[in-house]
Image (cartoon, rainbow, N blue to C red; front, side, top):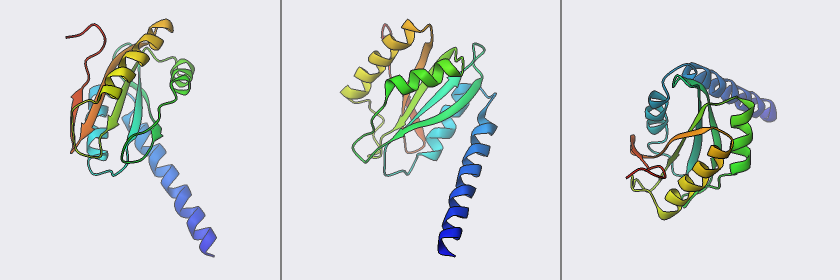
Length: 147
């Protein structure tokens, strides 16, 4: 009986998550960044989201692509790019939280931004932004070539 309740709860969670993601589709990607910032405001673990974007700036899909511990999360760039190609994404926006509340990008955040930017260019996919979120706010990390 307990196993059935647990399975039902897991299924309900999956369905709610899918429904919430569907509501974000078609919106401007900047709105999705704000919503993710609100969702992750009090998370104790780091999460990484990818927002797949059409050429008009509307959202194709929002993916939670990774999560880790309080000190960081691992991003499988090949998986990220594979998803973007399959969705025929014009662009990508990365969003991750800092559980410690800091909006300042770390050295690793900047290196990751540069790395992903170079890889997406090869596939003619545009990295539109990489944002750090904390306490319900967001801060954009400068893309390569920006001041």
